[in-house]
Length: 212
Length: 220
Image (cartoon, rainbow over all chains, first blue to last red; front, side):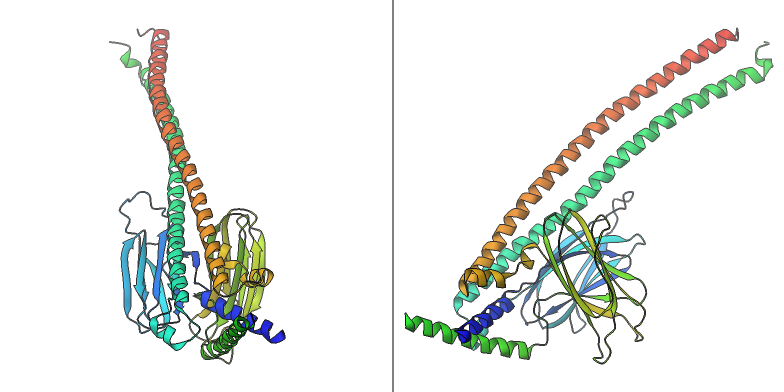
């Protein structure tokens, strides 16, 4: 009984180890360069993810270039590069295992908040099946299902981040509308009053105008 | 069925051996996470916008290149209203777990106290899990006595439920956004008409006042 429980525990741990999927969805504030590192365990894994610039506060230049995104492999090669974007999805297959570097570059001085999500998916291949007897094809199917569900979750995280960006834009528009309109009214009334005072002054100071 | 039980036991025993081999061969912590570089001066913060009633589980470890001296960092986790959820100074590893009370931006900040003499930056490994990823499947498996393929399928079911919940949440947020947009649209229309009205009113007041003034001054 003891041995059986111990083996069950081992199996549980083994399955958890195989299951643990990489889901990290965080935001980081980019002032100049911010880098995030991920370790890819197996060669051939699919690295997928997305990022959205959430705090896009530059409102006066609609053609603000956004930020640059560069992925560097453990060997130092640049695998993926996106320039001047406010958010995008990416996916590539890791050619080798090791530490991959994901960097965000901000060319402007205003800090931007970037929400990113990186996922490393591993599906047991034919070679893995051949190596381990207890990995049967159903594990491969389950892994594929899992990866499909992860891609749906990643898409949802992307949508959520985009929704946050739109909400910020909306709220800033609201505040601008109220602020600028009230300012406009005050300015209008002030201009009218100033005009009246000026005309009064013109007619009261110089008496010569009254004597034709 | 003694035959089936025997096969199962041998399968599990082989799994245990495989697990030992796997843990022995790989020196990477189970459960991938992101690595951050904490600068020697200044703080490095990560944040996430989380809804209320969500379980958050995080592990952090400081990794150093030379295995002799491991530098220490300080951690602080705050809720959207500024409540301190976790605060530790001069540690090399730790973990925190909490259930979110309010929806908002949760911030986790790391900084080094300056005790690191080496050059460069500290590497911190953060394993941040929220919601379904933070669920304790071991206890579920133990309580309901399920294992193997059934447990994996149960996890998939959990993931699908989480997707469904997320979808409903996104739909509600989109409805809120739409309401705000329409409100702003109506406001812009009203404010523009009002500004036109104020313009005309100011012009009329000016004319009336100046007419009265000139009549008083006997100019007209």
